[in-house]
Structures are given as structure tokens and as C-alpha cells.
Image 1 (cartoon, rainbow, N blue to C red):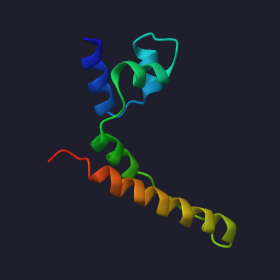
Image 2 (image 1 turned 135 degrees about the vertical axis):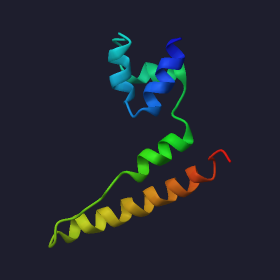
Image 3 (image 1 turned 120 degrees about the vertical axis):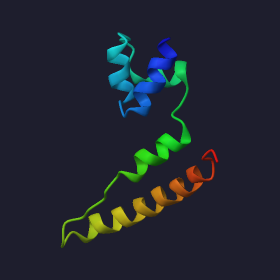
Image 4 (image 1 turned 60 degrees about the vertical axis):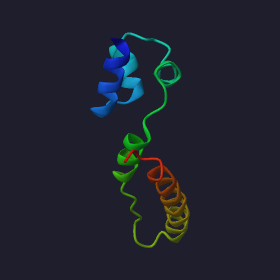
Length: 86
């Protein structure tokens, strides 16, 4: 029953920390992933696609870091998309 609740809560967008609080688990979000498994790849991919990265004009250092991280995230999204169920 708790496993079903955790799955539905995750699919509804709650974080593992929020779920842990709701089910009364004081050990925190790590126990949710350990006990009920990691996020499904399609859910993680959907969450990652929601990220919007922006840089303020004139901040070249931040722009360079953002470009590097964006390429890293893009490669992770590509990898995750290969594991989506048909």
C-alpha cells in the first residue's frame, strides 16, 4: 500500500523529501529511493526537460559554465531517452 502511494506521489510531482514527510519517515529522501527504488527513467527525463537555464548578459564566466553543464545535461537526457518504455 505504501509502495503504491510512493509511486503515485512521485508521478504527481512530489519530491522524495516531501513523500518521506508525508509517510512519517524521519530518515529523509534517501530511504524512499532505497526502499521503493529510483525514479523511473521516463519520469526523470520529464523532470529534466522542465529545467530552464538562463544567464545574465555580461556574465561570460557563468555563460561558459552554463554551456558546459547544458551539454552534460543534454547527453544525460539522450542517454535516458534510450531507456524509455515503448
